[in-house]
Image 1: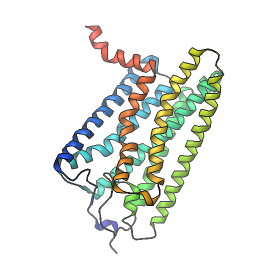
Image 2 (image 1 turned 120 degrees about the horizontal axis):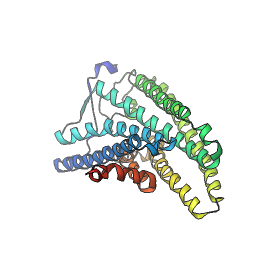
Image 3 (image 1 turned 90 degrees about the horizontal axis):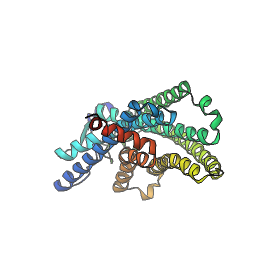
Length: 310
């Protein structure tokens, strides 16, 4: 039995078979990554420069944008490189680093989305306690806990996955290093330990989902009791972007990891991985900026400020 230390590189799944399609995928990935970098970069700049945006909601949105930037920079550059140069290899160490960072940023994204749901819940259901429950110190502690728990989760999964003996070749059925596809290369029952860790992570994810669902039930009940139509519209305008982002991220990510083996295929796995790891970082800034008037105004001032000074 050869162990993982004897493998110097892995073979990633090619996005296309023909040269024309490879170049097309390169252009698509380039467009998506530039949109993600621009959108999330603008949100971070607006949140850092706009003093009126120094609120808990925009503080967590800034952290979410950072996780999106990290996620898109972890998976897309290597896929673009492979498509452009017609290759599919990734070194053993680069694969381990890629798996760690994608787990780190996706775990942080889930934790931050849950915290942002709590922020909306307190803001709408307990507005009188908002300053107490979500003060600057409390927000900093929650953000630090989100990043720290994501780091520990990624470190635990990466260490456990790459300590497994691998003897089923080195071809991964995915365009980036993902835990389920690395486990398929293992020929030891030790992989059951990693499956157990994945089950714990899935349970924690479901716990976050249940908290989000419960919170939004309470939020919508409170919003519907607001007497003025303008008040209800303002409340919905701050909740709907977050709900859309949560739905896109959790639905695609959950289905990617929990779908039945009978319907699993390389093309479906590829499509789902793109939907939960590549599309959200590019789409989320658009969702938030279109639905939030304060953020739109801040972005407009950020982009037109130099021209106005002239």
